[in-house]
Length: 87
Image 1 (cartoon, rainbow, N blue to C red):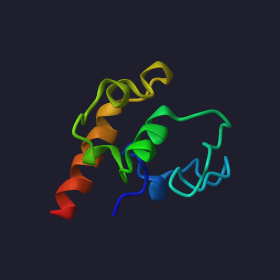
Image 2: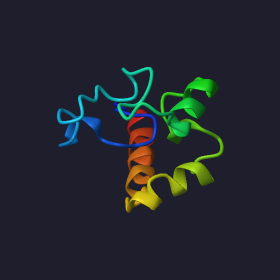
Image 3: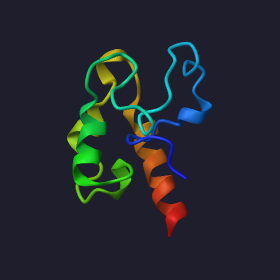
């Protein structure tokens, strides 16, 4: 079962309660108040998460969080796992 659009495991996130995040699936806007382009892209295409997209993994997802020091391959791997679980 997917927990986010991009592959973040929201249910295992230690920061979720600290920042009052309900997860992007439950929130109209991200907790930081800006726009998440990955969330918007998935929702615009009517997809549950990035792994279901024909362009997966796209450049946007592959670079998501890099500037903040996060490794996007973790999210990409999780999207692949969710996709495999569905089949």
